[in-house]
Amino acid sequence: MNSRLSRRNLFKALGILITGGVVTGLFPFLNNIFTKKAQAQQVVERVYKNRRYRIITKPSSQVTQLQNGLIDTPQQLFLDNREIRIIRHKPTNKYVSPLLFGEFNSPADIAKTLIDLGIKLPDSEVKLYYNFN
Image (cartoon, rainbow, N blue to C red; front, side):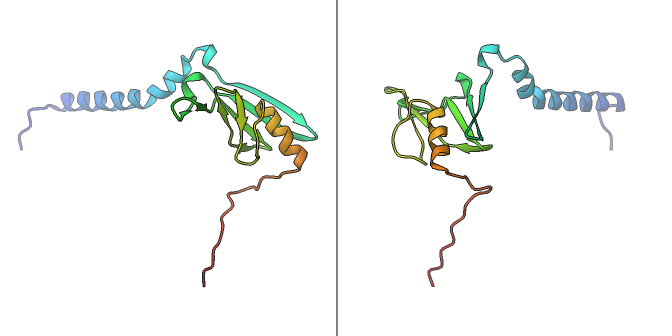
């Protein structure tokens, strides 16, 4: 078999391919290094009645918009290190959660209501078992 590439050219081509793959793989990480300070997450951590809740404000680039921009998710709520799903209705600026009925002025109000009601979240996903026999 006769090849047009010498050993030196083959190693050079492999080096370029490997370097390109590494640089391409590192691009998302390098992009996060140069994130502007205004886009960094803000974390508020508080304790209420001996239970800890945390509110994380997402950067504007990570906010999910739903229903033609009427509903968004600018913040995340964690109670005892478990996420509570919340959404915000933009015209009224009120927050809702599938765990509670009603609208709340802030994620902190949702967390305090859950703590006042004594709601404990399970350690793992709850799976329902149906036996139709």
